[in-house]
Image (cartoon, rainbow, N blue to C red; front, side):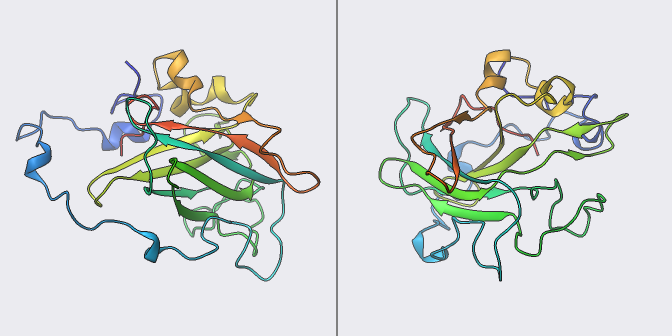
Length: 222
């Protein structure tokens, strides 16, 4: 088993949102829902949507990073021209959202959201800052490891997968029930990006490589 279960009591919010009964109807097949529209294309994107450090009066605080990789299908083939979205906390571990009242500073130059289309080889590229860890009150002294949320769309709004990317060597992995809810250790490792010196740009930003393979990379149940 690769993906986390809908119900994982150590991750407390799953107790409230996991299905408690069997579905009324069998699982719907691909012919039972609309798969032809909308289709996301380049006309929805702005020229700086992939760069989370731009579009503000000044530079955001924190460690600038480049995150890039490929979106692959189950057979390992590139998935071109697909919409990838990201959202994250700032370098202090706080989201630009009213619900987040964590007593860490907001950054007026960082809103923490971006998107891009993969190229002909299925590659995406984001420029951002490394997010900070943050407390989340799931249990005593609970802290989330630094992570970036990823959303990958297919050819229609009904085809969407969500996952998280983590950073190598984080000491919080062993204490995070979201990360640990994935039962397969090798599958958990697929969520950890690798530092890449070739992606790193001298005197400007550290680089990380992270591929998303549909069917193998663990996805979130929402």
